[in-house]
Image (cartoon, rainbow, N blue to C red; front, top):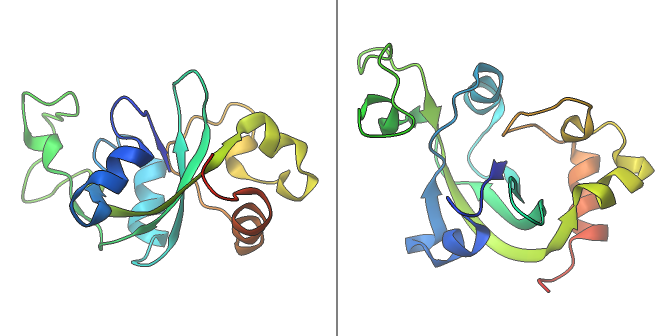
Length: 151
């Protein structure tokens, strides 16, 4: 799951009450569908910092809630406002994410160098999704072989 650190970083999440934050602002149908259809409470999350000087995996987190309506879609003052979405039939959802630990930063270049990760969706040319699934083997490789402790 990607987040711009200026909006919500792994440090912000670790400092939040119960280290949990609502993952607001998803406005891509494919990313929404991954959350809605595939994410379950307790699933692991690779917390990825994007659109920053040093993008990469910065921490490990988990899904901490079932999907529910993203309230920012109904707030006209929010950058994520969606005038076409209705409370009785919300278009956009979110989940709460709980930070578990910070890791050393694993850059996109470092991920690309690992042959065992070649099929990761995030590494596909032109991928701009903020949420992409990883396989159990990719998860194990990153969390056990690459993540290490925070720098």
